[in-house]
Image: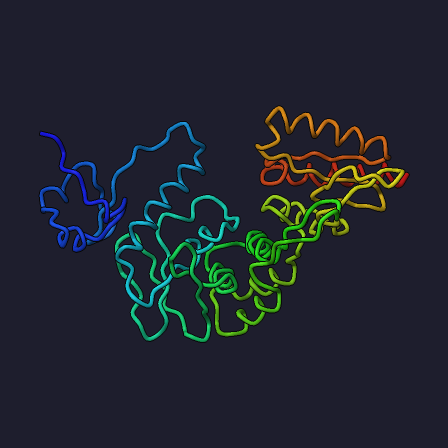
Length: 318
């Protein structure tokens, strides 16, 4: 027997009560094409894309859970912690999204739903905003709330992403973006109350910068400085001997003419490979040394990263 369709008004995720008001019967709500991740909700089950990267599958799964939870989200609650960070597109390590993180202002009671990490927070410690029609803790609150979850380097990486102002390399056009929050706003939120992880939130804020555009770039900077090397310049424009723009490097030691480039998966395309060849050839002609590193150097073999950069700096100053 053909499966009964669902009213289009419901969308891909909906409350059971809303479906019943539209005449959907109990039998249809038990259909195999529907899943229930939270009490009183349903969403249309979609097949998992097994060809996608693991992180992409995790993100897709989290997005479906968020969309389903929002249909039954209690009034006055908002997304916070890793869930809010995901909605902002902030960089996080893997493995933080097994549960949805939902906040409420005291004296409301934090959610105790299965699959939800409910957090009660003092009103003075939180502001909220809307993302895609969903209530979310503001960026400063989101960062501070991650102190219970992240270690120092990743707290710095999230702060870097919040503070970053996107710009056009070479300075040919003025910056058109804006930061999610300022350093002052992060400091004010941190001072608004007692946060879990406060002992590392404070030094994380001190080490945050505005020029980092990815989690690995933050880690590279911190690894190098913690190894005793000078702090590299971030988001550095490189010019040739005649003032021509050659490219922008994630990190650099301009006085030694050493550039550090993080090679992500996007560098594996043919078009990007050709651009990289031309860029690094031009760098070499202008007297620059380029240190190219991958995720393995950053997250598994940081000593090798430090060694390569130290050798390049010594060679440039010889």
